Image (cartoon, rainbow, N blue to C red; front, side, top):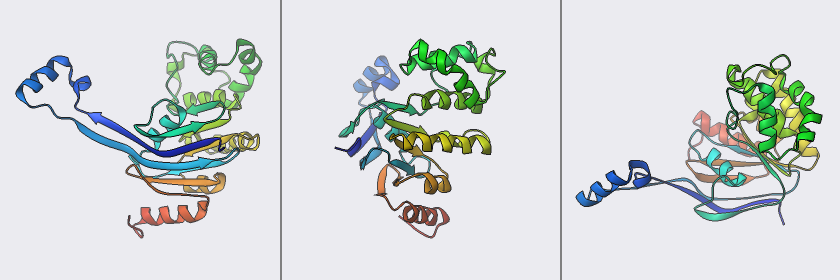
Length: 249
């Protein structure tokens, strides 16, 4: 069986229900007959399978449903329809700035994030210097976390998550963090993880990055699956044509 499989996954958001407007307002609108809800399908009938060691690139314009799909794959959300099967340990870097305490130091936050990911104190003691070195945060260890730039925060989160050697690694625009040198280092780290047998999903707006690193590609548009294929170059060419206006959907 595949290490990761999504079968007709659909995810629906409902806006305007009583959770948004409060119970009192809900009752008043029901009495007046002025209560309406709106359904929005962020993803609809998405299907794909991945084997161990494969890397899937998910492409699509903003609002295509990419990040919502990743939340379902990682287990943060439950699909409204369809199902997702996962094998092994999952590490997801979706909202890199979350899970940190701005008033704690960089070092304290590193141990906090490690604990959230299930790392032991001994593991963090043994790997802390490696984490800081990879994140390029030497000299910032005692500084309050809130003083870091968004890029520095993301580098720390990326560095910690990569140490877990997950079976499935999920990345949402993570490799766009930092300057060119750090992006290159991140890509090298990704190849190490993939070569170790991990299955990886990468959401990226960089087609060269997807072409270079991914073995499969999934194109989403307004929640709809356009194509899932192992012809990464071919699909990227089609998507570039769509972006340039040479291809319509």
